Length: 348
Image (cartoon, rainbow, N blue to C red; front, side, top):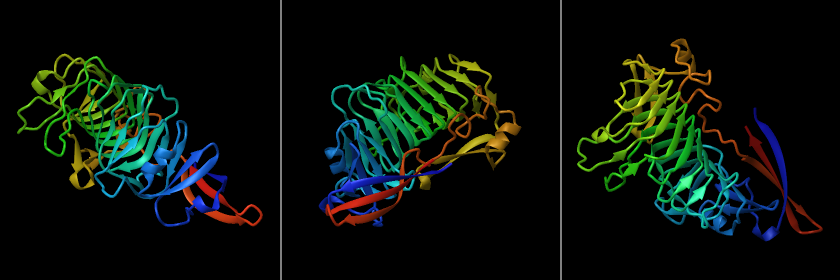
């Protein structure tokens, strides 16, 4: 259910731009005060923020610098919230917060990222929600306590640096290695990591590339609960020590895995659309799977709902949980010569 919320902000006349403008804009909220930035000033908004602030993004396309291949550096413990898939962040995103922080409530969500989302410094407690990631999500330094919910990512690459992650109601083309722009496979190894995937749709686990001659990595010590999985590829037969519970699969498991109450159906398959960033669609007997079909076939998960991204407590959706800026009204106070901005936002 949508709820309308009115936020009143008193802002200096020289520094405010109207959200009634059709351009994409970012709103930095700090101690109850707001400041707006144009679509090409998102890095400036992050630079001006301090830990604990929130940056809300309107619908539209945001760029860092002048190129769609530039990188947004998030080096503060700030939340960045968009409106969903209609908020597009063109380029790469690196999260690099100094001091190995233990974060509380930091959220990165409600947007379509056209490249990769990478954590490059130690941290704990990152939440990623309702993000459509054209590239891959991974880490190059140790992170723990990752929570990912209702996201699509072309690839989730569980390097040895992702020490704990809980992923719910999300969709992936691949769990494992990802081929970057130079066609080089990124090495990964999830052994010893605490990884839980629950109510997810996954096209393939591990790497598969017939022309590749180097090792892509290992998937191990991961738990998959109530998931729909098409392909499980074994690189050098080293995908093992995983736990699968109440999963619907097209193929059988390799030895060395723990399998409990899983379903195999050769008529089930997953298709993906290259034109839509490899977003995947599940089909059974050539009909697109939905919750009703899953329930009719008895594919019920341990939580009592159907398996896959449509089940669980938070079914897959790109509608952001955060505040969505829908309209604004600006009035000039003749006495103080300030703009009074009334933002109308909606929250699901």
